[in-house]
Image 1 (cartoon, rainbow over the protein chains, first blue to last red):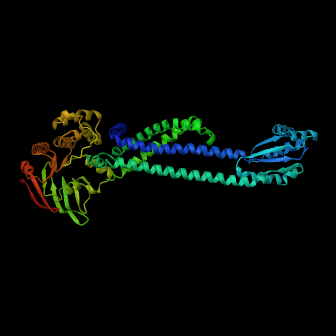
Image 2: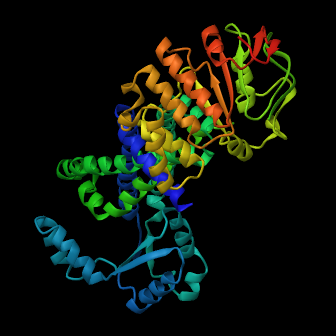
Image 3: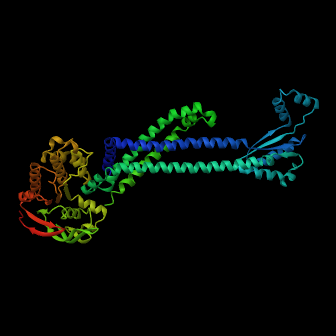
Length: 306
Length: 222
């Protein structure tokens, strides 16, 4: 069995080296397929990065009346933290709000002067709430309107919740994000299927060229595995070489994107490529080997029926 | 050894074999003659199970060839050596590797292969072409290589389908002499040809075919 395996692997390597241009044509097509898969991985990263950036920008702010007692606000904050939908809450005190306001308007002299003339802080405290998922803001808003608030005694300290003003934007963003994810998935699937079909057909052609040899091997008494095995090894070699070529090509390509397109894409592709190099390498290598071996197996099997 | 029982083979409307019945005993040298399209190649395909009969049965000893499962068929083929008119060598393998492949298929060890391949290449006078690819050899050399591959596993039966069809008279004579020598050593040989000179030089049993039928079966045909 081990001798048989050794012979099959050796024959696969010999077939590849003697296959010449045909072998390299198969490597080229497999490289194109693996490049498509790598591009899709990188584009998905950009898409998910953009979507998570958009998601991060969505929040709900609860504004409190001026002079609302801090202990009641903290009580509400604690009860909001208990909600499973809530990812993060930040408390901005009335003093902090005033400081930020002054900082923002430091060059706006009339506003600062009007504020100074007031003599007291006209701003209330606020709680900034971020949900885990963008579609969970509604249930947080509903919680704030519910009877729980009466129990907590918070109903009379809330000035307003900006969810209802932001609702339209949040709803639109929710549908855009889910649409983008679905479209991304469909395009990915379609491109991968097309690439696999092209690679499969190329490998099929390389085996079609030697179909008479397969017939001779059968008549000489070779077992199916002895005939099919070297083709599968050859397919795996296509996968390994194509992976190396793809990873080498994408190194300078992502470096260029990282240097020139980071502000446009929002994500430094080169950093992403380097920090996920081994994961991408593993995905591409496995895809290449499986694609090469499975294509070869099915292509050669056609001529092995008897 | 080989038994054809009322074997008929049709391809669409044309009849390649028409109710063929004959027996080949172990150790015989049988020449099957006939014009192109007489059914000679179809006959050899039936023995190799490269094609199956429309009607009738073909036995190799007590085995109904066309009832065999794939694995058993592979084992049976290892008991038969085949030589073709167009040589059917593996073009991407050297002379050594072509023969080694047949031995590997039969489960021989690396040591046996290393010992036997140079020896059999010497036997067919190709000892100096061991690392040549088929395209680097003449037609006669390629056919001798095909014969070496056919005999390397010491098969019980050699089927030579028009082995001299692409050869000049000198190479034809050489190939026939090698086949006769193989037969003298006890291996059954079935040779198909349309070359009258080959049959005359063999001077053994001749089965004559016409339009898929066996029309004559003579013991010492000339």
